Amino acid sequence: MARTIGSHGPTTLEAIRKAGVRLIFEHGYEAMSLRQLAAEVGIQAGSLYNHISTKQELLFDLVQEHINDLLRELDLALESKADPVEKLRAFVAFHVSYHMTRKREVFIANSELRSLEPKNYDAVVALRGAYEQRLAQILTDGVAEGVFEVVDIQVGTFAIIAMLTGLCTWYRPGGRLTRDAIIAAHEKLVLSGVAPQAAIGQLRAGGKSPRTAVAGS
Amino acid sequence: MARTIGSHGPTTLEAIRKAGVRLIFEHGYEAMSLRQLAAEVGIQAGSLYNHISTKQELLFDLVQEHINDLLRELDLALESKADPVEKLRAFVAFHVSYHMTRKREVFIANSELRSLEPKNYDAVVALRGAYEQRLAQILTDGVAEGVFEVVDIQVGTFAIIAMLTGLCTWYRPGGRLTRDAIIAAHEKLVLSGVAPQAAIGQLRAGGKSPRTAVAGS
Image (cartoon, rainbow over all chains, first blue to last red; front, side):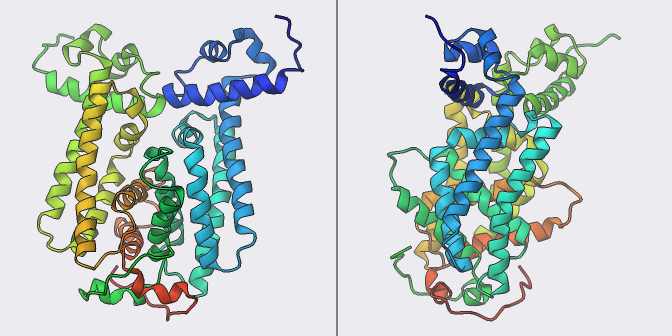
């Protein structure tokens, strides 16, 4: 089968990326060989080099693209939101929805930071820092306006992101809960979690409050 | 150097386990060879088999021991606590403290579930389920008593555990915050996060509350 390099370039590169995500997710980056990757795509090992120069470059591209997508889509989700409460709600809905569809990329971005060369590691950590900064700013603004109370902005930022990302470990499409129900469950935890303690202090002192329906959340 | 198998048995096994944790953490289970493991411990590859029968057995032992430790220590932390609020506070403090000291074991238990054979995978998932069930029960009791409001107990359980475990990715001893400050920051997020919405509903409607100090949390 004759094949012209270039005409199928983007398609083959896309197939390499998809196979790379699958193999790294299942076996780990270090255990994956380029020979195995080529076999998975259905091309000769030597042909890989028409599309990627090294295994490291592939990993870096995959992780970098994942975080770039996250950042771009988050900014779209936040742009029409005016106040910290609405922004935080939008952050939760976006982060949860996105992570429902990109489980393997998320796993790789978290578990294979160890395999990035220093320069690439630094670039990825900087990108991830930009994403974290979006949430840190929402929390900071909310505290300044008196609508949030957060003991430590940095710990709060990391903790909320870890909580929302956690659904990658258990979420399966078609499960017991709808997408909206899963978002609502996380939204309650996060929005209440940053609420000022004055409002809930009495509960912690042992007072009881009437049970209420969770309508609308 | 003469060496009697048996007399150094436990010591060697402990060294093998420690080296195994380090190598799997750094390279991934599949990429780690038993030859590499033996070299790391400073014994002949053949001698490994006096202590472990397979690489799979080592991984299973490491993950299983980690979760057994978690369960045993959690039960100690909870046993003197009477009500759901105190139990949840104790759960947060325990889980955060434990994860500060076992970062590599936690990473392996989460990232290498993929590498467990089906029988071992099932055993680990059951153990993990028992740990999750402790938190689910605390949340269920708190909802029944009207002191917690949780949209979905299962999602809440997973989300809180993911949030608290997240500190493994950033915590370093000797950093900006003390252990107690880190616990307090998480405690605020979790305890407020499960508080009934009636108490904080007014904030979400746009009302402002006076800022308060976070004394005692």
